[in-house]
Amino acid sequence: MKEKSRVKIAAGILWGFYPPPLKLRRTRKRKFMTKILKIVQEKDPILRKKAEPVKNPGSPEVKELVANMIATMMEIKGVGLAAPQVGVSYRIFTTNIENKILVFINPEIKDFSNEVISFEEGCLSVQKVWGPVIRPKKLIIKALNENGKPVKIRARGLLARVVQHEMDHLNGTLFIDKAEKLFTIEENKGKEIKI
Ligand SMILES: [Zn+2]
Image (cartoon, rainbow, N blue to C red):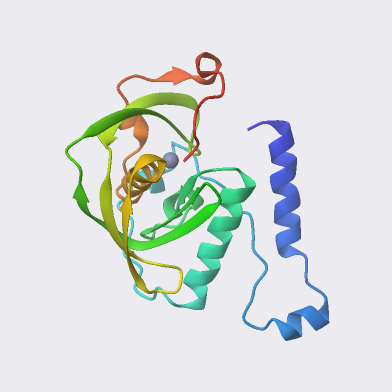
């Protein structure tokens, strides 16, 4: 990680723990200060585990985790983040594509298109490595949203790509297992997306 982003994340963590003024705390009983979470890296065994379904999707604990995941994803400019990447083995991921944030709890992919496409992927949990991965172009996914309500989404383009990368995270798979080839940051010249 670059020095600059480390400083930014450290500032985020400090802010996360900083107590809000008393008045604010009283008026926003059900709100919480978001925290920037640490991204676990490739060697961590949690990334190789099948994540557990969430039993209480509407609970304050899950809401807090989701809020922290969104804050973290935005802080590090990721387009997607799965709970195992922040050290929590739950079937949850978030996406942030063209400023639209989506939350997927207990997601299930219901249908894939036959048409596939190769696209360059990177991962927040695998530093300095990128590579093209072939995946279906479109899909239909069912999940619970941040309020625990069922949603069905038809995904295409970058969203379909990110959804599949994150589903893999929930099943203990990394993109490096599927990439046609791998290369380093120097060769890639910053074209990559971080998921
Ligand atoms: Zn990833």
